[in-house]
Image 1 (cartoon, rainbow, N blue to C red):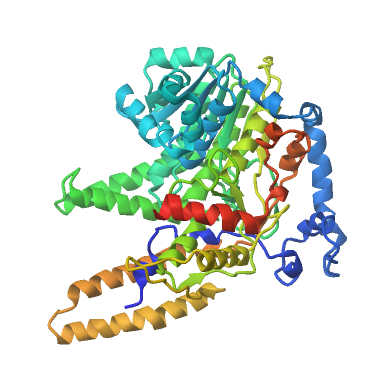
Image 2 (cartoon, rainbow, N blue to C red):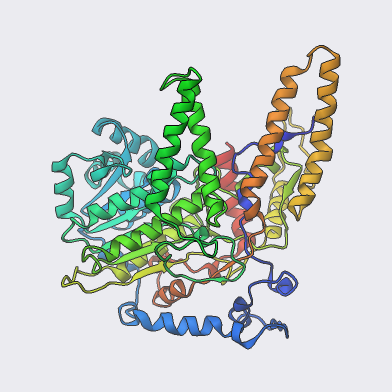
Length: 590
C-alpha cells in the first residue's frame, strides 16, 4: 500500500505547519493580522490597507510601541557591539540548563568561542554521577561537529581548554536544590553571575507529569537557586512564542498573568494541576492493582503512561491551549512571574526569550548544522525519501522560522543589555519578553521552502545504489483538515477495511499486516488531531522589544556581524537552498 509509514517517519511530521499568514501580495486575501500592515508598508510600495480595517486597530501597534519604548529606554539605549558583548562575558560564571539540546549546544559553543576568558560555564545535565555527567557532555555536546572551529583552534589543547571552561554537573531541575549536594549547591550560589534555562521537554503529546516537572517545576527550582545567588546579574528563561495560543491577532511581548487561561472565564491554578496529576496516578495504580497488574509491572507502567499523556492533552485544551508542550511552557512563565514578585526578589533582572520555529545555523560556527528533526524539516526529509505524497499545509501561509544562531545572538545581546548589579532594597526590576521571530519583519511562506527544495533536488538529484536517478515527484497539499481527513479515508481507511474483510475470508492470512497498517493509520489521524491546530496558525508575533534591542546594535565590522539577529538580513531562498536543506540532508537524514 502507498503509505502510511510515508507520513510517519517522524512523530512531529505535522509540526512544521506552525505558521503565520501569507506574503505581502496576498496579505488581505489571507486576512493577516491588520496591525502588521503598517509595519510592512514602510518596506513596500504596494497599497496594503484595506478599507475595512478600522483606524483603532491599525493604530494599536503604534500605541503599544510607544508605551513599551518608554519602559526601560535608558538602560537599552547604549550602543551594543561585538566588543561590548564579548567583554561582558569575560570572567563571568554561568549556569546553563538544556546544554545537550539543539539551542543549548549553540549557546555554549558561542560563549566559549568568542570569549575564551569566561570563568566557567556549569552545565547541569541529568546523570547519576559526575562521571556520567562528564560523559554525556563529551558525547552530546563538545564531541559534535558544532565544536569543530574550537577543535581546530586549540588542536591537542582542546580537551584541556574544555575541561577548564565547561563543568558538567550531575543534577535534575525537576528536584529540589536541582538534585545537587548541599555543599555543591552553596558553592555554586556564591560565584554565579548568569543563569540561562534552556531545558525543556518539547513533546506535544508528552506525559503531563513529566512536562510539569521539567517545564514548570524546573523553573521554580532554578528560581529558588537564583535567590541564593548574591551576585546574580541575570536570570534568562527560554520559552516558546506559541505560549500565546491560536490567536489571530498581533501577539504582544507581554508576560502571562497569574491564573490567566486562554479560555475566557477560566482560572488556571498550577497547584491544582499538580494535585490532579497525583490523584490520577493513584487512581490508575488502584485500577491496575485490582486488575492483577502489580506496581512496577509493564502493564502498570503502560497504563500510567497512557493516562498521563491523555491527561496533559485534555487539560491543555480545557484551558484553551492546543497541546501539552505549549500549555506547560505557559505555566512555567506564569510561575516565574509569580516567583519574581514574592519574597522581595523583584530586583533580579528577568528576561524571557520566546523563539518561534528554530532552524539550522545560518552563519557560524557551522552553516546548516542542526540536531534532530526540526519541525519544517520533516517535509524535506519525507520528500527526499519519497515517503510523503501528501501534506497538510497551505503554501501561501507564512511559517515563522528563525535560524538557531540568530536566536543565540539575540539571547547574548539581551543578557548584556539587561544585566545589572542587584540593587536590593526591594526595587522592582521589570520582566522583559523577547520574540526572536521573523514573520513580522521578513515573512516567508511554505511555498519558498517547497520551491527551494524542488530546486535543490533538481540540481542535486538523488540516485539509487545502481546509479539510477530518482525522479522528483510533486506533492499534494491539503489546505484544510477536513479535506485531509477525507483524503485519508478514501486513500487508506477504505482499502484497510477491504483488507480486513479479505483477511477474514482468508482465515487471518494478512492479520499482522492489517494490524500494523491500521495502527499507523490511527497514529496519523492522532497526529492530525494533535498538530492540526498549528497547521494553519494565523497569529503574528510582535517584536517591538526585539527590534528596539536590534536598533542598539552596531554593525561596522565582521566581528559585529557575528552577533547579527536581524531577520531582515536573511535571504530565505538562499538560506533554504544553500544552507538549510543541505544541512537537513547531512545532519538529520544521514
